[in-house]
Length: 533
Ligand code: N01
Image 1 (cartoon, rainbow, N blue to C red):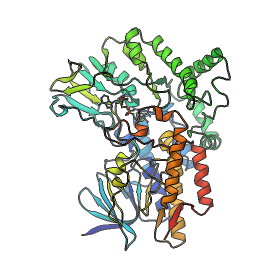
Image 2 (cartoon, rainbow, N blue to C red; image 1 turned 120 degrees about the vertical axis):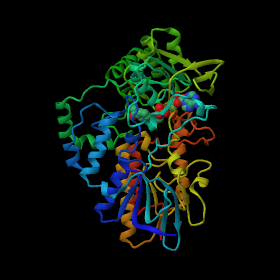
Image 3 (tube, rainbow, N blue to C red; image 1 turned 135 degrees about the vertical axis):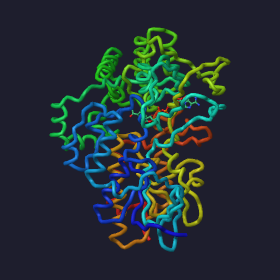
Image 4 (cartoon, rainbow, N blue to C red; image 1 turned 90 degrees about the vertical axis):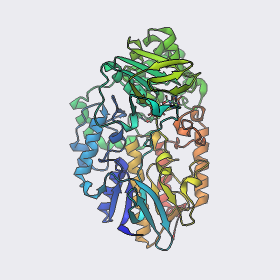
């Protein structure tokens, strides 16, 4: 076995998490490199180039805070960053901190094995080359393994097939073409209105309708941007002390039933007009009390009924299967309005699934629908997909995938017991996907970095999570989730979207601020729950 490179730190993935982690490691003098399967940086914003792709968190929040110079010099143009703008930002970060020379592009990591004697990892790349490293950090993202449902006959389709999460670099031209799209989650809700603008005909195959609120997207006024920049310290602090890591969404103070029905509806109306996710932050009990939640859900259903001209289509677009906000709430620009267009049809497949895909289209409920192009907006094997795609083996020859067969178990979403010197950025059972992702990334990268420094400064050779503390953390994660309405939804949060995946609620929904306090207390207690050897 020939080791072609020896590193202190090997990081997998060159998205925001990987880049910031690399920057921290290099700043401390570590020999560190990223291995990235794409040919550029950006992660999510490299792969998700589908029409209409943009972030659903405002740009001034969804950005790095670790460098004052960076946050002052970058000028966001749009209220919600588009994929091209976010991709440019990622490239700017890469150049500014001189990271590119330490990134191996077009290289996929397939295996990692911990070697007891040397207390290091041997990592195998897809060209079979082997890299030795002391620390292995996964920055592989939570929504990075596209899910293409196994539908009979998919290989026989003669037209083009696209997945929103692996979109080609060259934008396909849908002009004069009939397009079929499967999926009405965030990716579908964003791409459907844009594809409908050019396609001759668009057929939307909907299994479950989704709640979506208007984004009220606009250009970002320069004075607003500059004012925000002047007060960045304050806004970043507010974000850190909030539940979801977004400065303007501070914890509400009153229950939905503290006010009259009229007042409640006027609060919802104001939030609807403001756009974004404001409505979810109107009352304390929207995510814990089904009756409170029903008031917001019905408000949104009534909006759908107002917007969509055809009453039966409107009713098909109204979600009844889950409380609002318990699946990732979509933000849209004219999503429901799109169903008023003559070239758009909604095909409800909730009762009869797609039987097969054939040469010309697909068959459901005995009817054949033909189209030229097929778009899968069918989401991802979320949170565990990218981790399990690497064969990670500990010193006892046990794979992480087998350890996680019944669902992921982590300590703080950062480490896994019996897998020393192995770290995940925003892993399962951490707030990542239920927060402003970049804020959570920064917190995890800093935590992991400090943990590694603590280990190094004390001349330890390995750090590991204790299984007792891990079990307690997993239990806490589940207890918090089950004190809310989240588990009532069938969503990627609990693995329901992947056939055969064990149901487990994966994100930590106890709030960003609470989570950070817990982590800070752990640091202060000399890394309680971690063992050093
Ligand atoms: O994926 P999803 P997504 N037959 O899993 C349907 C983030 N994101 O890519 O609900 C028919 O939400 C499935 O139906 P059902 C964001 O966190 C952010 O849209 O399972 N349909 C559903 O409608 C988001 O939550 C942004 O019944 C099938 C859809 O496909 C996450 O990524 C933008 C099917 C999948 O929805 C994932 O969003 C985009 C089948 N066999 C994404 N299998 C922003 O920042 C699946 N479906 C704005």
